[in-house]
Image 1 (cartoon, one colour):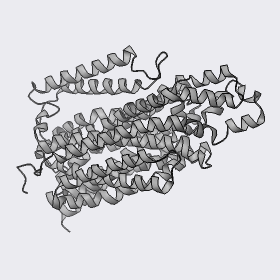
Image 2 (tube, rainbow, N blue to C red):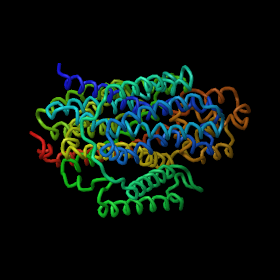
Image 3 (cartoon, rainbow, N blue to C red):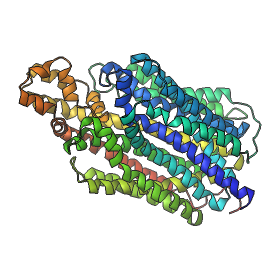
Image 4 (spheres, rainbow, N blue to C red):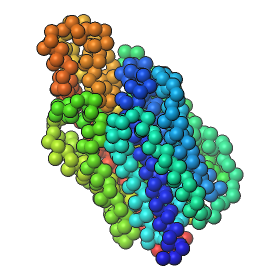
Length: 557
């Protein structure tokens, strides 16, 4: 084996470890959130704490979404390996700080949110430059395989994070962050020792105005969409909140200003001209829509399993986060089976067949999920998850290879950052889009259903109405966090203790809440999975329009 051969496999191993760690930590707190809130002494269902909950999840995702383009561009200018190595070190330091949170209550939550943002900066450095490092290290005929392994590992990490969060939260909430410390330290030492610059850094001026308008616009827009799912006034969501509307408008205007700036500066941060390359534009459009659909599916499946299906099948609410991660493993298995294989085959037969076919499978899987009853047969559910994982694996590796191979070699860093921005932004957008759809579905039928169910168990009409008129987002987050909201809401003011023993046992049991909300929840699921199926179909069409030629003209075909 030549020295060059050894290096490319070293680069693949190290960057795969880096993106796996970054993607696992993007989702690991989702499942472990109940344990984290208990550990720092916060009530996760208190309306005043919903903001903490959202930002603990979204702080990392938003930073990863808005910074990857700038960091990819800086990688082109100062060295992709240099930025990547620094990202590993920042990630390790932030993981250590998260695991030693010295505060409780609100200050404890703010400590975690702040260091999650720092961790997101490190993760963005890793993801922005990993694909460019691999594209530099591997020849064209092996590039799809290498990027396929790297990309599928990153996507599978999102779902492995759910399982890891459930397992580690059973030990200690701090263990959720401990696990990244030794991996981060090892990866930092390894990357500094073994990786080298293959592509030549290209000196250029930093586009400060472009960076500021893009980061500010994207951050304000995504943050405003996030606040849109929180209740405002007497409304179930905050889309009528002047601050939300003003933030969205301001974010759009800043992004418009960014586009104007990029056409007038000599060294722009983002190469808008890359969108003239059909394979690049079509591949990124398909990636954005797929990321939105995948993120929506991830969150909805967690709610479906933790809030309804697992309690109906005898699982204690406190254990549902762990088992939700376990029961979603077929999705990860599908990724791992299809990703490397499709990446290898796309090197020989081209990307369009596999990426378009994979998205068609994803669309069909969403249609299949629509046909399932709320209390489904697990094997049918598992088969659909596996099919969706296979479809996403078929799409992701060839699509990444096609996008990265379509650009000039000296612009691979910024191209990698742009690709990661579309993917990460889709995940952040999915929370606002699909939670809003689900809340809209719940708001139309949940209050009446909940009030009638509570009154049937001897809850006074006034109290039943009070509970039923609480914002649907509270019920949604209760299911998301694996909590029984009935016992929580009625027990907080002592009302539960005044009810007959039989009624109290029914209300706090495993089946009352799931059976009560299954109808309204299914209505919301229909909205969510229909929207996801449509997005997957549009993404498949965009992928089909990428053209047959996707290798940059300067490279040998």
